[in-house]
Amino acid sequence: MKNKELMGQERGYLAAAEFNAHNGLIEELDGLTSTFDKIKIPAGGGLTFEVPGDNGESEAAKEIEGVILYHHALNSYYKDKYTGGSNPPDCGSLDGKAGEGTPGGRCINCPYNQFGTGENGSGKACKNKRRIFILREGEVFPILLTLPTGSLKGFTAFIRRLVTKGKRCHTLVTKISLKKAVSSRGIQFSQAVFRVLRDLNGEEIQAVMPLVNHVKEMSKNIALDIDAENCDNYTVDKETGEIIPLV
Image 1: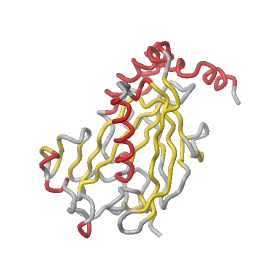
Image 2: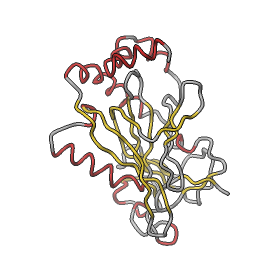
Image 3: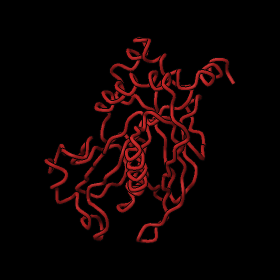
């Protein structure tokens, strides 16, 4: 392991202060359309994430540990069946409240955002997902995990438990793993599971807080279709929101 990596791990989440202290790191990202490396959830009920490696190639990981700096809703509606590629949706929302495009308007009132409007009367025609920005220990910038529809219920329950105890997700370390689940149509898919590892101490919270604010602002500039990049031979399961390779 490189000395730089060792130093980062030794500093733990205090390393986030490096991003906050050096404007040059922020300037380095200025103007880039996709500024977050992405974690991929496997298809077909796989139990191993694909995470970005130092050499540019993906690495396998059964678990992800880190601080959830920020998360937000992501809705996307395709008038025609999605068959792959990075084409933007006909209508999309980065907050789950207001849609932009056709039909646009308030998501809560949209007929395509109602159960039973999906293919064969299953799920919703508008896919509800959630983007989660995760800071791993020893790193100074987060990676992005997009939760498909089938993992939203568990994540919602996890956040609800935190709020019940008066906690915020950016003040603790979370472990994310995968389990196999089966849809109502008998399709196996991978479902994310969340649990708390530990609370951050006061110094660590102080180090990550400015980065929380940076990520909130940067997330507004991420394209709605970024999660479909390099998916020319993929389709999307209408019930679980899972990206599935075409055979």
